[in-house]
Amino acid sequence: MKILKHIYFGILSIGCWRYPEKEEVIEVNGQRLAYFARGPQEGKAVVLVHGNGGSHRSMLTQAKQLARAGYRVYSPDSRGHGVNPPLEEYHYADMTEDIFQFITKLGLDKPALYGWSDGGIIALMLEMKHPGTCSLIALSGANLTPDCGPGFEEFKQWIYENYTPLTAMMLVEPDIKPEELKAIKCPALVTGGTEEMISVEHTTLIANSIPDAELEIFPKEDHGSYIKRSPKMGRRLLDFLKKHNY
Image (cartoon, rainbow, N blue to C red; front, side):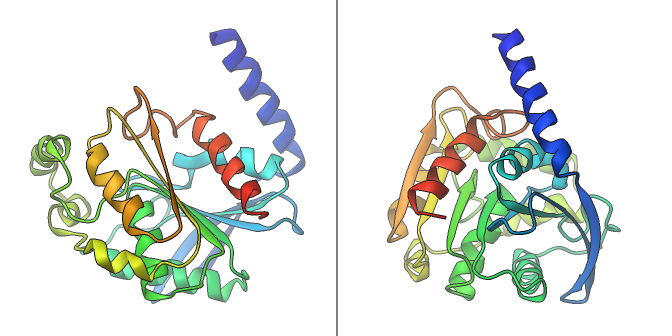
């Protein structure tokens, strides 16, 4: 199995030599955000939004898979993340507006968007506040409130022990009511893992509250094991895009 995994990532890397990552900077919502693009210029746009404390590299495996499949991939470092300077205060509403302006200023016409963790929250809030921005969205490990299961209650203790303006946000935000998700009209893919700190019940609630949503629960996977340096989520995402002719 390990040999096959090394062969897979070797093939993936070779396929991406044609589309090396290119770093750019854009000013949105009063912030200068670094972003990284790869894939053919003529490819359909997919925006990847990482989680709390991460960077564009958190979803590098999916970026390579998508680029190799012919998509043009845009991976911004969220405000205060990656190569962007840290801030003294963070709010999901600000980060959502960042991504909306990012899509608008780059002239991306109804791109697909995949968000992991905080990125998944941003995906939900983007289509709630600016319906029709995306052709479709996918999200992994997202939550509507900090009260999203016993696993997250344990995670809160880690936050208290590693308290920063960035981690503090997760103690009080987001605050999304399930009925508000009815505003999302585009197809959505909602995923989680059986070992996820966000309960399966909470993830199921999100999927059931979006009119046109699919639910995928990965067995024996946690918050990031099927995403970071794993091809599983990328393959599922590609199937979702192709199913909707994107």
